[in-house]
Length: 528
Image (cartoon, rainbow, N blue to C red):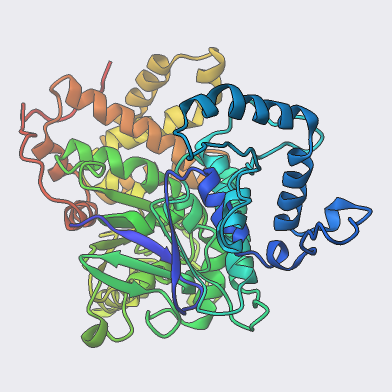
């Protein structure tokens, strides 16, 4: 897949100024900018030596000040004496008879037409940044600060002109710029893009960027995604997003989620546990996400389908499709029939509440064929074009991991997470907690079915409100890495122990890393 860029496109019209990083605000460019500003061209009057000098020289035009300075210097005794000595003591002796060489000292910019003279005078000016309250500028400024200064000057010119079509192109403004300055810059550019000039036109500003920081601040309908040599506008009517989606995404696309605009592949997940665990699982089975340029976007419990629709075109036959694989990973949220009693939804032996009076669902709530129809409905909500949905095979992430082959490790990770504060404080050790969990797991696994065992493991999370699934996922990732590092868990063995929907989602957004091979085929055991 090719590298992609994101464009900020507020509106469109004509000739342009291109700003590319790095920029240097040199005297020549300052003179060009100032020469075309309304303030420089229209303020003040010219100097006329035949008329009375104004009481305040600052009321003169720039050319007038130059001519006035030239007249003052020309009459200065020291300048006249130096000029006379140059002519008499040196140039006269270097001259031919009848062809006298004479020097004349004047202010640069005092000869030629008015445009040339003004340009020469303005080239004597420097533009520098100062901090408010500081009498002098700092000894040096970073490229980022100078870039801001340059952009401000270009906008000054574009905003004051009254002919032509104003267009400003900025390439990767995030270079050398502090993250907070990046946010201020994009707010400012979007504001300027909405302000009309004196002639009624608005400045079009096009920004190319690879910065999630910048992308998170730009209105989604002002984004254009470039991929595979094609441009894909995110504007309303070009994607499958509806109006309410744009409002929702404006609230929830932050810097982390804005990674989705720069990915070669995308995993959209609904929780911190998936966000933490999936990169480790992918790497251990030979499908490293970083090597494949895959980003994970954690959207929490809501909004998965809204985010997915960003990558679905309204008119794919006309616009084409975005050739980036997007995998949406979600729970089935249908528990096995044994789970309600185990996790505490109902008391042992009591009748279940009517289905309409409870939010949870179990398998017996779906008569023959209806569970598969439910799964297909979940799959169909976000899938389409290059977006695919991968639904938990059984219930939720933790349950499916335990059910499919990692019951012991998930059990130990859950207990480590439950005692995380004690482990951190030093009152317990990770090894002692793990060994205690291993003993209790051996007792439980010997007297329960597979579904009951996985339900009891998931019950640890449901019965302990303070237990962090993210912390458990972190511990589980560490356990699995240790198993493979010590040769106890091969990529093939782990792949077989994982829920199929997770393996399929990872494989959909990656290509196989041929460098990773199975070292051993042993089953995983507790890392002691």
